[in-house]
Length: 529
Image (cartoon, rainbow, N blue to C red; front, side, top):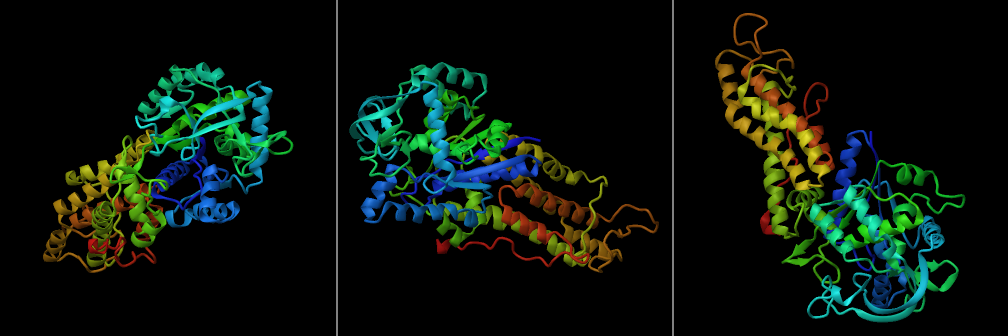
């Protein structure tokens, strides 16, 4: 059994949630559900980054107090588990959770005691969109932030700095040895290349004046507030009572210091913060490193990154309200590649839902249950092991799925994992066409057998005069298909928990009889897009 601490990033709350964050939240949820089903101990954390300067500027633009705007949008992020079927164990807001300020203060003081904090003048560039200090080398040919397409601000102030330059070699060694695993490999190589160029110390505070008084005060320096990334990255341990009065609490000892794996899911745009800044802070403070930084690429609309600032935001809750949580989760897991951006359209979501869910999973389960009602009065037929070469590929797909899903998720490849589940559907539909149970039923009736007679489940139809003969061909086919559908429900559960529960209910007998067949995934009319 593995003890796994799993986190999403914490998004800014200057606007409502968008589909790009929903991707990360759903991926984290799938990993959490998968590991729980394997018997692992899991804690899944999410939250919101309330102390960003972006939030302050958004409130000013809206003409409302910062607290009002932050609370409004943070509440919408906190409510995502409902529509998206997320299984968070904890949720931390950096401006409202009492665990957080004490925890980041303890982290600050630990790094100060290590001699890694000092005051200096900062004159340079700052991108509010990234909440990041930039160099000229970071800009595109037009002198803009490549992430947001706008020129950065020029800032001059006296701030606190962190001696990041001290940790280039320890970080390189941790990554090269696999102690700090970064996936995919291309992102690992990106971080190693950045380290090879040397690290510069970075500013970890800003003036209280520039922050408009919003944020967590620097210990013993009320004229400064903590830089938002120092504040935000600390949430991974502050949520575990790292700042408890009498020292880091039991949750920290269990889920950070005592975890087998400490896993961060992050977008590629914040890789540097999670694979360089955060591990360096932990090394300075004498704390264990994360074991894994798992990186996803972007969702795009017409080739442009989905984001609030670019005007391409897609509301995941509105999608769920219109098309259902299964359609939204399935598109995010089935369509988004392990490496590379994925372009979103509603038409693609609808096509995938209609083809895979309504026409695939739903149609298969509906057909199997309907045939059991038509030919066996709704009574489940036991799975049997007769010589049935036609069933070989289907049984192989069912047998292979658990390990295939496990291996794919270990590689953070959700598309490959869902493909292993889909293979059951493909093979089952192929098996139906090969065995043609309706023809077997006609042949059984023609031979004077009981097709449709409602004989008790488990009492095999006889194909000859003697007792002890093998089950009828129809029982073999129906038993094989029922077992395959149950396997499908089991493997589908981490990806589509609501749908898997409906499939399981459809396949569970009550009083010895399966519920009547019913549509599990209503087909979406493309004309309503």
